Image 1: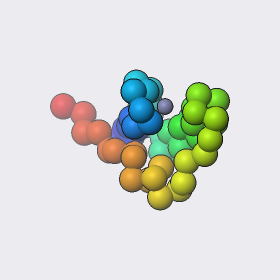
Image 2: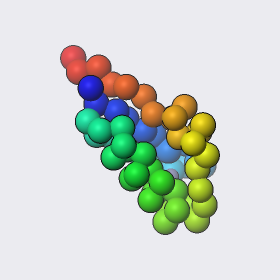
Image 3: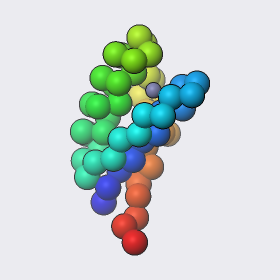
Length: 55
Ligand SMILES: [Zn+2]
């Protein structure tokens, strides 16, 4: 089941989708570190990851 994350920092349009929640987590952490110069809490990360049903 695909996982999706949409960044909610300001007007950031970053969105990632992957079949692996681990990969989403890894890429989101890298994104937040590189683009926002910060970190994301595990709770925020888990809250931000949506499971996407394929139509
Ligand atoms: Zn972002």
